[in-house]
Length: 258
Image (cartoon, rainbow, N blue to C red; front, side, top):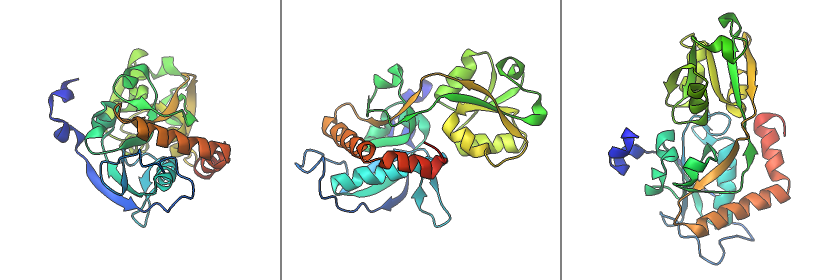
């Protein structure tokens, strides 16, 4: 992509988005000291904020969400503080997040193309695509969506799928702008992951899910290819959360269902 011609620092366009302290863990996958963070004493996480309910800033100014809870657990297992950096999804998807971050946690779908540029953790969520439309749009399926304006988030699997199906897309930098475009009438429908878009419209009258697409997508935590110890740390935390039932609890907390 043309953006790759830009220097990695410029492409990242990262802005510090606050730090949250991780408490000590009695048993840590990184207890042998193999995990070497970019910033001493911190797990630095790149995340594209806002992307409710995965990551967003609450009324107190704190980074919260499903991904943020998982990030805090990884930091706890590493016995370090959590530091979150707001990064564009383009910088995450391209793999250039590794300039300033240890990992990227931002509802990243695992794909073969992305796996060439980064390693992925074991999947932590299944997340297929949906088409959500305004009831007044007349859109009832993919076919009737053709010729209408479909909002997508840039550099995502939703954007790729929409273009493959011949839809007219309007790209947005983040999911917050994407969903607001639907509510304000800038676009007729949205196509993207069911977890985020379903959450965005669940309490909104006048909007419906008109298409569900079983793409087999799974979400993973992205880790630089030259950081095997970091990948081991992340997978260790995910296994602990899964075995203890904590991952199911977090899913219910943020999505209302497992």
